[in-house]
Each structure stands twice: as structure tokens, then as C-alpha cells.
Amino acid sequence: MIGILIIAHGQLGESLIDCAKHVMNKQPPQLAAIAVNTSDDPADVLPRAQAMIEQLNTGDGVLVLSDMYGA
Image (cartoon, rainbow, N blue to C red; front, side, top):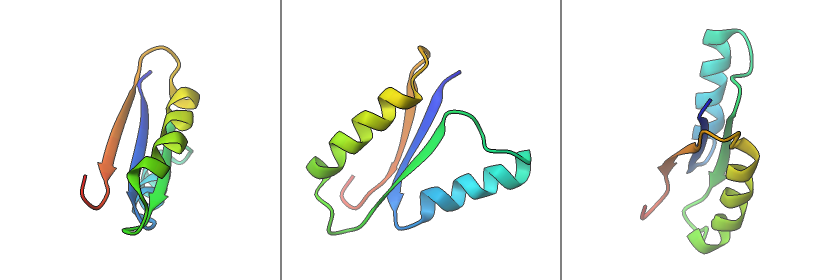
């Protein structure tokens, strides 16, 4: 199964995961979010994203959805 990582400003990513939980009545597998602020340097977010991608990847890859300022 392909993992999904949402990198988004504020609590948008967690809110989207909450919507998926509501629809599925459970935590979707291999789905995670990283919250960022407009003041965050993308270079500082990269190590967190790489670690999360390694955690989510079970061999089929990870789709990264980004809603960051300047991305």
C-alpha cells in the first residue's frame, strides 16, 4: 500500500486525517501529517519529512502532498 504524507500549514493536515477517520471509522493506515508555519524553513522540515517517509514506506512508496508557503 502506498503511504501518504501531508505537509501543510497549521492543522490542515491533521484536520484532513480527522475527516478520513470519520469516513472510515478508523485511522487510515500509512497516513501522517507534518504541520508547518509560514516562518518554517523548508530545510528544517526536510529531516522530519524524510524520517516520516521512511516510517510510512512499506515498499510501495509514499505520496507527499504539500501545502507549504513557497512550495
